[in-house]
Image (cartoon, rainbow, N blue to C red; front, top):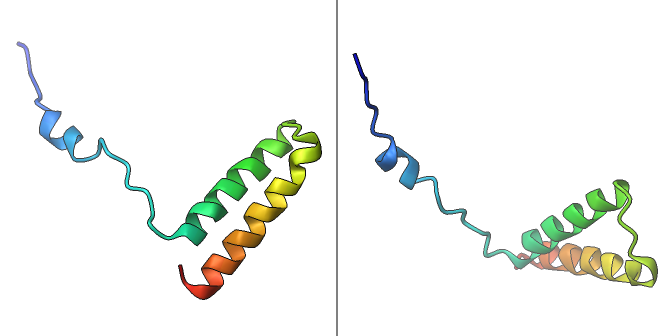
Length: 66
């Protein structure tokens, strides 16, 4: 006895990921991902200041609501 389950329609509505249009939240997500990678040994060297700039920009955009 073979049972076939058609899951294509159920799966198709979950295929796309929706990115946020809020630039502050997007920058915060980037900051958190990079900061998490630093904990695993990612070395940015002199470019670590970019991480601080991303965090600063995220805070400003979240504060002004963009």
